[in-house]
Structures are given as C-alpha cells and as structure tokens.
Length: 117
Image 1 (spheres, rainbow, N blue to C red):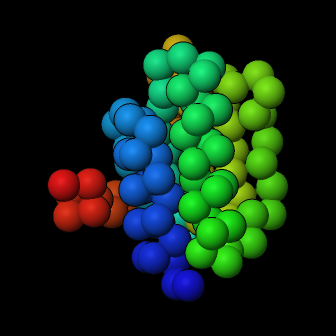
Image 2 (tube, rainbow, N blue to C red):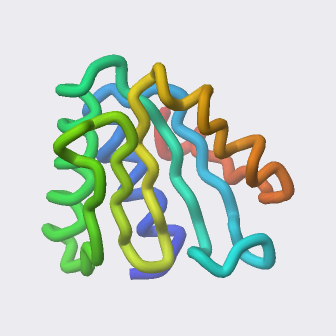
C-alpha cells in the first residue's frame, strides 16, 4: 500500500468516528520522522480512543503494519505509527496547545476533500 492510500485509509477511518478538522501534511523534505502526518481531534477521551482504534483496526484489516500506538490510555494525544504515515489524534483541548500545523508550517497540506466528501 502506498502512502496516499495509507493517508486515505486513515482519514476515512478517522472521519467514520467523527474526527474533527482532519489535516494531512506532506512531510517529505521537512522531517525525517515520516513522509506524512495526519492530524485530527476528538471532543472527548472516549472519542479519541474510538478514532485511534478505528485507524488501527482499518490498517490491520488492509494488512498494514501498525508499528506503535502511543497515548491510548490517557487519550489526550494518541499517536498511531503506520511507518511512513503518522496519525496524531488529539483531544480538542490539547490540539491548540501543541499546534502541530504551525510547528510544521513548512509542510504542504494535502487535499482530503474528495476522500471525506
């Protein structure tokens, strides 16, 4: 599965659990951590966990390797490491504090309109 398919799968999974403000960043040439970041948030700890679980389950169902799942128990900032794609799922109260979109402001945004329509 290529990175675009991975981003699409993660974005759809997050959207299925009503994640808000889903943003995809192309990290190529900006960071060595991953090729893409997907950032979104939920409005409660339960919703953050549901989003993370859905992303993980959908990835595993498609045969993708989920390298790590961090922060699930606290559900304030959950990181799902899919290798070249890192999914950041924030609690709404934490997202503005960490503001990854500003921190990685040099990274171009990918359009998710067709995927999330």
